[in-house]
Length: 279
Image 1: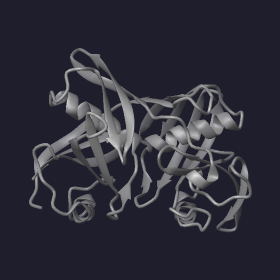
Image 2: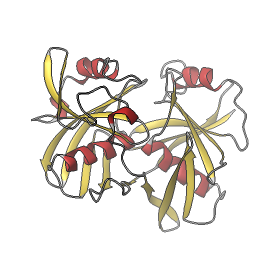
Image 3: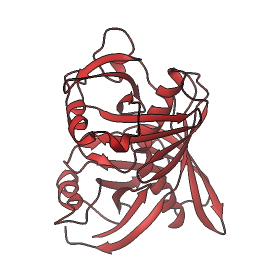
Image 4: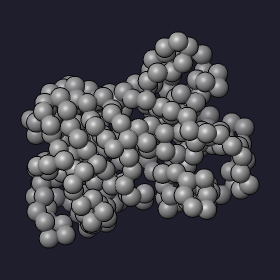
């Protein structure tokens, strides 16, 4: 089976072009191929298929074989892949994931895709829709104690659930390996959660680390970056256009603050290598 390894800010996935390839057991493939010692290695697998509600469909699996609703870094890579393969001729098209359609815009320099802008849709803030168990209808600066430490979390769904915690120093010094799994599996989150730990440098810059459910720490998370900026704006910490500095690189996020309007994410999509593997 042919595959292509790509990454967005270090968030790396194995991309399988299902317009030409067939994967019989997708869950088993995710587990075996994602293994960084005995497989190709990655934060999961992405299956590129012909869309029903959109031009293309992105099907995403985590390394543990669980299905994920959305990945902002992966959808940028899918966008570049289908453009480079000449499956599309326009620089604007659509990709769906778990039934949600995202609108893509490519920026081309010297004939190549330099960056990808994604309309990530409006954030979901209602607790029951995220889902998160909290005191009110929304979890904004909601107090929670995890691992013996008190946090304030703001919960947002960008098609998948996120809990954002603002901390008072660089997250590079934060014990993510300790608190990440505790948040992911906390009883407050019926479907588990992606946990972001962020430090606001100023009103235009945020530094962030993320623990993704079903994966662990990744070098970047597109939906998590969007959720973090939404949470920061809701808490009055930043302006409407923010650069988020992740371990793997930077993403630019824009949101008006109007809850009915979309969050826009712009960032890179890069190739690592291509190859073939027996599956």
